[in-house]
Each structure stands twice: as structure tokens, then as C-alpha cells.
Amino acid sequence: MGEEAPVMPEDVAEASRTEQEIASQPACWRRVGRLAADVAGSLPARGERVAVAGCGTSWFIAQSYAAAREEAGYGETDAFAASEMPAGRRYDRVLVLSRSGTTTEILQLLDRLRGTVPTVAITAVAGMPVARAADDVIDLGFADEESVVQTRFATTELALLRAHLGHDPEPAAAAAERVLASPLPTGLLAARQYTFLGTGWTYGLANEAALKLREAAGMWTEAYPAMEYRHGPAAVTGADSVVWMFGAAPDGLGDEIAAAGGTAWFSDEDPLAELVRVQLLAVAAARVRGLDPDRPRNLARSVILAPR
Image (cartoon, rainbow, N blue to C red; front, side, top):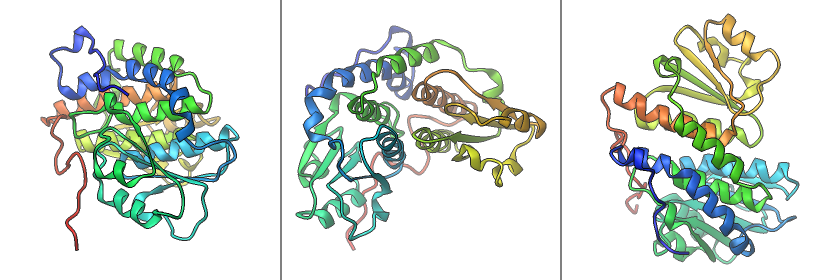
């Protein structure tokens, strides 16, 4: 694939780099919709038993893809943090997700798996060690980012993986454009605590949403499967809380959140587009707190550990 960058909308030309990357997501998703057929031979085939591994954001994208693949009837799919993938399990293929292509835990995993199972890496930098260590590579360099905090690369690889499962990225791209064109509701920005909920493939999105606010703005955030909200997380809901649902909410949940004094945010937009709204919120919250969303505290683009 070529390395051209998506065209940035004119109205974000003066925005931070993170905001520009957020705004480019609909174009990226449409592009992988066209790419999906070209890379189909590299992605897990129907019926294969598959493991997907990543770190940080990539782990949560792995969770979403694993659930979506099983829901689509493509076969048993497990998602792991790369450092926690158990040894000895039999898989037909292992997919690793790594934007930078340099993450230590991904390289350690590929080294352990070498010669035992076919491996495929999705990365933004095809010449890096992860790409060289995997048996096959899908290069999404056009969706690479300058920002430390991942936005468009993560959602673009998920859009590609869902397209491989038969989901047209266009509805999500159109929904993301609506989100990008709408102001953030003030009540969302005023909260001090956020609980994100999902079910099935959207639980990974809930985890990723919570991570975005933690990374960019240092916020107090949590994430759970939707039906787990009543099993403890409800205790932290109060007047300064937002409970944000990805996908359809369980019956009665909105009333329970209101009774606890919190704000329930339920949307009919595509869940992937809702993640874009959270990304925008993370940037806005960072600015309110005097932080630079392009340079988050204590984080680097890639975790590279010194050899022991």
C-alpha cells in the first residue's frame, strides 16, 4: 500500500495534531473498506481458531475484533495482552497488532511463536522489527500518527478487521462525520468520573474509551461489560459522573443511573463513531486541565524495554 496521508479537513487545519488525526478517521475507514479484499488472504479465514494480541490500545482493539469475529460465526477467537498470552494453546493463526512495530512484548511473543503457528502483524511501519518477525504483514502506514495517544490507527485497523467480517465501514464513517461536526455536550465535559460500558464487540471499545481519557487528560475512568455495572461499579456513580454506553443499553439502566445522580449517555450512532466522540472529549478535557493532548504525561509512542 502507498504511504499517502489522508486529507485533513480545512476546519481543523489549525488544530492540534491529535485533533487532525481524529478528524481524518472517516477517510481512513473508507480506505480500508476498499483495501479489505486485497489483504483477505493474510487475515484469519472462516473456521480458523485464532488468537489476537496487542498492548494498550491494541489489546482493546483485539478484544473488539475477537468478539466481533465470534459473533459473525467465523470461529473461536481469543484476545490477549501480548505479555499474558498463555503458552501451549493451539491456534491456526496468531494476529498481532502494533502501530509502531517496535513494542517489546509483541516481539517477545513473536519470538516465542516462531515456527509453531503462522503469524500476521498489522502495523503502521512495515520496516520495523515486528513486521520482520511476523510471517505476514499488513501495512496501514497511511493511518500512522505523530501523536503518542492512538486514535486513527486503532480505529482504522478495527474497521479493516470488521470489513473482513462483512461489515461495510461506510455507515460508521458517515456517523463519525456527524460526530465530528457536532459540539460536545457540556454535561459530558463537566464530569469528574466516567464509567464506560459495552457488550460483545463494544466492550473492547469501552475499555479503549476509558484509556483515552486516562492517557490524554489523566481522568478517573472505568470500563465494564454493561451487565456488570450493577455488580459494584454503580457505587461510584454520583452527581459528577457520566455512564457512557456503547451500543444498546440493558433495560432499566438509564433509570438506575439517574437515581444514583449520574448522567447517562446513550447514543444511536455507530459505536465506532461514539469512540470518536470520546477522543474529542479527551482532547477537550486535557485542555481544560492545562495538559497538552499531543504530549501526554509519562507516555511514549512505543514501549521498548531494555534487555535484561
